[in-house]
Each structure stands twice: as C-alpha cells, then as structure tokens.
Image (cartoon, rainbow, N blue to C red; front, side, top):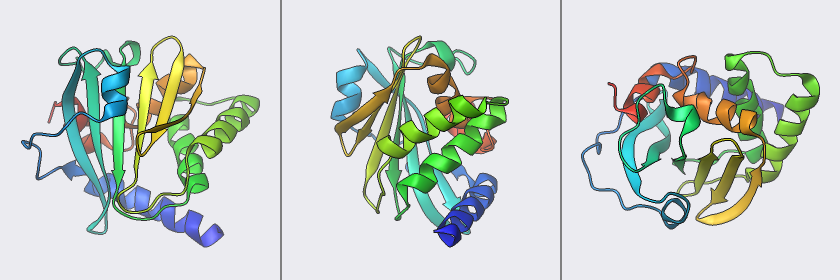
Length: 186
C-alpha cells in the first residue's frame, strides 16, 4: 500500500507539470444526469486532462450553473467537477492526496483533517479506467459526490467544499495549467 501511495504522489506531482488542455476541447459533451439533476442550467465552463509521464490519469470537466463563471467567483457558485479516470487508483489514496492538496490553501486543524479524510475515504471508491466521480459544490452547505452517476453521499461543511474544489480552481492550485483550462482562462 505504501508503494501505491508513493506512486500516486509521484504521478500527481509530475502530472502538475504536464497538465494540458484536452485535444477534444471543442467537442460537444453531453451533460451527465447527476449534473443535470443538481444544476438548474448546466454549462460546460472548461475541461482538461491530467497526464503523468505521458500517461493519461484522468479527464476533468467543470460544469457551472447558468453560464460562464468568473475565475474568482467559483467559491460562491453552484458547480460540478466531473472526473473520468483513465486508470486504476486506490480510493484511500485519492482521499489522502485530496487532503494534501486541500492544505495548499492553508493549515487545517488535525481534528478537522481527520474528519475530512474519513469522509473522503468513505466517499471515494477504488476506481478503474472508465469510472467517473462527480463532485457537486453546494455553496454555504457543502458537497455531494457521485460515482458513475449514483449518489455516494455528501459532506455538509462549506469549508470542506471550498477547499476540495479549490484543489483545481483556487489560485494556489498545484495545477495552474489545468485550472486555466477548467476556468477557460488559458
């Protein structure tokens, strides 16, 4: 398991340098049912692809509600991040890496960190190529998570939601090229 964790860290770290706009950026993408059910008027804001050493890790799409979103407005708006995995990853490692990335926005108290990690570990299953996790930001409330279109659960904590979606959307992201692709600022 430790080897898996180290490999995931290395993949993510190098993937930060290799994140790029998707070659299919202009393609018409259907709105996933869970996004249509959560956002009143879903709009595809942007999309990107995370690669590590040339290997595709996942494709990610940012869905906003009712049109384009200003880059600094994301924390206060309903939105969805849809991640399509291109390879197998261990759910616990996804949760651990997510928590590390959430800490880029500032320190998190240990009791809060443990609670958030527990929630993400429960919500994020092991994934394989073709699986999809969709997170829905509910401003002022928290976040809901879907796995292959089925509700897995939610975290009722607005700060959790801000930090989680900030992994990709905050200026402090470790993936600035991917952030630009998602927000449409590249």
